[in-house]
Amino acid sequence: GNTQKTGHAWWYDASREDPNNPSHFEGFIPLSKMRDFFDWSAEESIKLIATFEINGQTYEVPVNDYKALGRNDWIENGIPDNEEQGAAKILSVVTSDYGVHQPKKVFLSNVAELVDGPDNVGVESFGELKWGRRLFASISVPDNMVNSVSGLEFRPILTIVTSFDRTLATQYVRTFGIPVCDNTVNYELARAGEKEGKFILRHSKNSEGRLIEAKKVLGLLNEQTDEMDQQLTNLFNVEVSESHFTKWLNEMVPIPEIKKTIVTIKSIQGEDTEVEKVSTRAQTVALKKQDKLIEMWDHDPRVAPFKGTRLGILQLWNTFQQHHAGVKATKSLGAGDDEQSKADARVRARIEKNMDSMLSGASTKEDMTALSVISRIQTDDKELVAAVPAGAPTS
Image 1 (tube, helix red, strand yellow):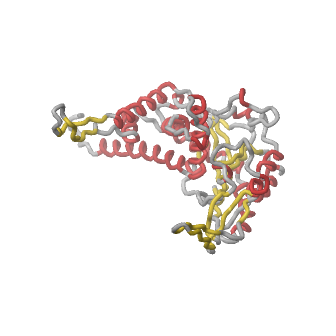
Image 2 (spheres, rainbow, N blue to C red; image 1 turned 180 degrees about the horizontal axis):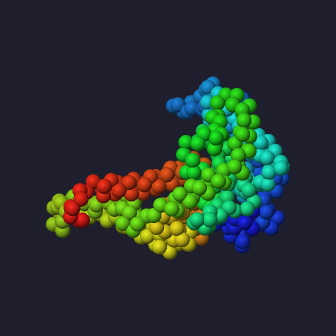
Image 3 (tube, rainbow, N blue to C red; image 1 turned 90 degrees about the vertical axis):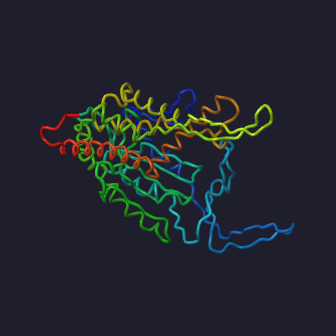
């Protein structure tokens, strides 16, 4: 949604769009689309049976302390023909006291009130991962903000997530989007330890009744712009020299030693002979990764304008992780034997990986690690300089 201001998602392919069911909208996504998308419920099984086969005899045993969660639409109507391999009616098996937070309450009851209210915000994205086992949506303000010091455009976003496979608590988290690289950055970077920037509700028994409390976070969307703007200014104002960048690069992507092992082979005469085997694969992978990061630091339009600053470090690592870190094409994502299906599967894998990392907090940890490493390197160098006595050799 809001592509007039944010641009299309990096995976957008106009040739594959269905005009009757588009994936992108010039304005905010109509709320009716989100209502239709989340118009299903996670049903709890009333009985769970484990089946065993022992010595040719079949035994059925009730599982009393667990329940299965299943999508009601697929249970009632069957799995749609256009779903990829891996889709299943059962979302997960959980303990009997696991609290289910229904999509309509998580994504519609609270959000609809905010979107339909006086604040000028709307639905920017929504979707599912792992065939409904994890769900997400985001709402944002319509216009990008511009950090006047760096020139970087950004916009406040509220990201909403829940899961039915025990991987994620239900969360309403304040984030901000960076259109130039189509990335989402967690608000924690702007105010580490800030307690009002998120609402987390564990899937405990009777927890669904507390979802209404999330509204206190929803109402803060327009208030977070100043903090984000100041943080971007702070990051841009700290210079990063080439020597510090090199140290940072070598710490983030260390080059391993060439691996040497002793293996036994048969000689022409049939005798066992020990020889040294050298493997450079790990070193080659690390060097290629470093080369890519250096290329992006110098030339990538998503990174190079901020080169030589801590903001550039954030942009570099975040963009690399989002768009260049390795992903695997799997059959569950539609990969076949031909190159086109493998390429398509890799795109799907990257979409899932990026969103999964953002929802789970893995991308936030990566961002914070990148910034903490450059901060420590620069701090250590300052301490080193301060420790040199007057008149000592400059080397």
